[in-house]
Image (tube, rainbow, N blue to C red):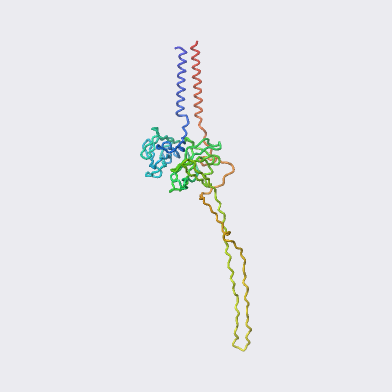
Length: 399
């Protein structure tokens, strides 16, 4: 067989091997896609698909477990019921009950398997939304160890100042000091239900994972940020905070919804109540007669009767006690701003900044995966080899 032909065939086979390896790497070695956060700003439309958010992805057991879950939330123009149906047929109702009807929808999907991708549709009112036939996706990774909780809290109000019942609160941790885990986390969430806890949201950042929801996320409360969005029937509002500013014992901020999204975010300040002075009442002096003149009758004898004695009245004694005017006696601290009573911190923070891993200090994030680098290097080697074989075949054919 012609040597040049053999070399050309070998080069072609080698090129096919390289192409196959790159295809396999693109399907298995590439990092999973980060979660889309466009649902935070999508306007409410007749089709609520754009407002669908996947949040609160929690995996605690490497098997099927009720502790493995994710939350699906969306918004609608009209008040209607909402459910989530997995492609395998399992259906989940709104956390407020199967009979709940409203413009915000919050469904917890649980009893799931770790390291599994779930496809689902939403049933909003009488319509089933399938995301254009592609279905919606939630990706669950391997189980993560439970961490010490680290809660952030805040108030959410309607434009008229009333509690924003039914508002969905979504939070995303973002690197702010170029230390610890870079980038952003997946979405964490909470639902405002006034009958359960008033207008206060409460989100545990101990569940924070990378934006693909597969690895844990190490954050620094004093250096990193958290982006908070509240979505309700009367509008929405967003703002970014230092993480520690939303953590007790600091007073929670207040987020007020707006139809344009430019709602007010008021940062609460602690109110000191001064000591109240106790008024002192000055006793009224009372004059007392200490003695009364007494005439002693003579005894029935011839003995001369003694002269009558008279004890003079003693002058009353007065004690001067300083007094205060009533307006000066009592100091009242008036403050119209409601004050949240939070649990006191266990101890004051150290001067040196502490790295927090899901709420637990001094734990570093796991080492990054270098599989992608190895695959790229292998692809380069294979490509160079194919190129050399092609050149060799070219020169042999010229001879």
